[in-house]
Structures are given as structure tokens and as C-alpha cells.
Image (tube, rainbow, N blue to C red; front, side, top):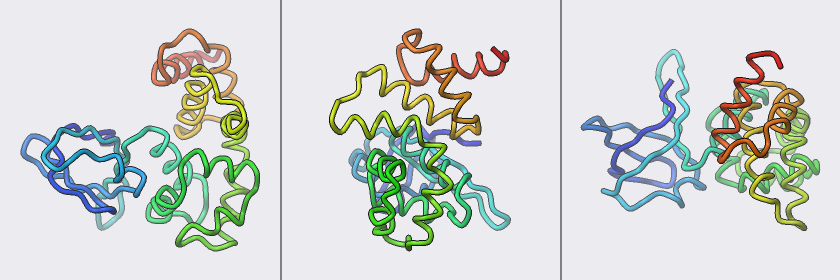
Length: 201
């Protein structure tokens, strides 16, 4: 699995970017949310990736932030009928935070406005993701009125990352809650939580 590319941005369109890594050019499909964060052509870039393997092709999808990639993986792995193209459309049509809030609030009207999604797909997304996004997104939904503390944001990112890796929400939330305050970043929190879950504690 190719998890990130660290090189130089050669060229970019709103739907894809070409990254030169030590003389090898990688074509990466991206959502609009990541396109807005790309550096200028010729500048260094580190882009997170997800490799999709099909019978006829190996396709790289790229993201400029971990929450974008986590949501992409949640959609592709957990919602029937949603493949990489529709998952990119979701990220291009709505911010990660707004999307998660819409799912938690069952706001099918907002989700179905995303290009390429109809009402039935929006209903399926809510049905199949609500439990997975529940705890983490509820923190974010509440943050519209009360800005979350850095610790809450860190915990939220860590829970979503663990769910994207295939862990149950209850297990992910318990491990993160027990370890909160012991890590300086969401990445550290995920590593500690993985160790704790693996040891069965």
C-alpha cells in the first residue's frame, strides 16, 4: 500500500495532480478540497494517498489532510454503491466537518445536493455511516456552538482514523478516551490506541 508521496508537484488540475518522486511521475486523483490546498507547481509536496487496486488498473487517490482520506475510506469501505469516484465527489461537494454533521443530523437534503448523489444514495450514506460517525461527529456538531478544545479535536481525528482502519466505534472511542492526554498529536494517539487494542486491554 502506498500511503503517501513526498516529492515535487509537477502539474495540477481540479481533479488530479502529478507528483514527481525521485524522477518517477505519479498521477493522483484528488477532491476539490485538496486541490485548494496544493502548493504551486514546482514546489515540494507531501500528499497522503489511498491505492485502489482493480483488475485493469492501480489507481492512486490523494488527499492533503488525514480527515479527508479517513472519510474517503469510510465511504468506500462502508457504503454499498459508493466507489472512489463518488467518494471524491462527496469530498469535493462538502467539507469533512459539514458532511459529518449532516450525517449525524440525518440531513438527507444537504447530502443529496452533492453532485452525483441522489436522495436514495444520501439515505444509504446516513443509514450506513451514522453509527460509525456518531460519537466523533457529535463532538464536531456541538462545536458549531462551542469550539472544541485541541484535545477534543485530537481525539475526534484519532477515533475516525481507527474506524477507517476497521475497528468498531465503541472500541475506538474507549481506547482513545482512556489515552487522552497521553499523546501530543492525533497520530500518537492512534499509535497508542492501536497498541492498547492489540494487547486486548
